[in-house]
Image (cartoon, rainbow, N blue to C red; front, side, top):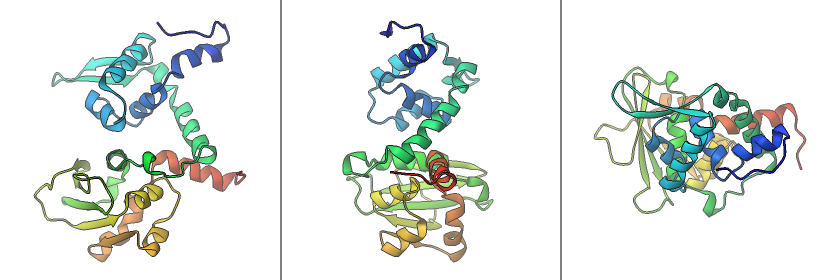
Length: 235
């Protein structure tokens, strides 16, 4: 039973449903396209499985999401009509956060696993060559065991690997976690990261020149950056 505010105001009623810890972040993951429990966990690495199960149950009970079973027998979560109506709110909160609740990119905010998961689902794979493409990310300051990641793209599908996939690598991106996070959050350009030396590229010229096309930054961060261009007022 959700604890209420004791008010009939529709905003208060919405806050009762949405303002519990992690709830809007869970909805963000569903909006971003995660459907399986383990996919949601990858986007919520600090959320315990027990709490995630509880939030999913609560959101199901109030009609924001529903559980379905696909033709392979997997249990999936998807947004209902009520859930899809929250998408503009998720985007507006992301834009507002980019403008006014700015991260200082301190160590406790940096998570290379979350960064790579977000990159994996946010890349523009439509511009990749039709053949298989393997991109290695080499982080110079990541925790032990998380310094190398691989994106494997083929036929429009992009997989993320923490172990070498066994294919020839086409492009290597070497960076600090902070530098690539700041680029992904639209806080610095690819040119600025390259000029600083915190990010380097190894590979053929055509793939290096294609990088700004397929790796454009987080969709939410891009909307926030675009809003600053349209309405440049800031503190």
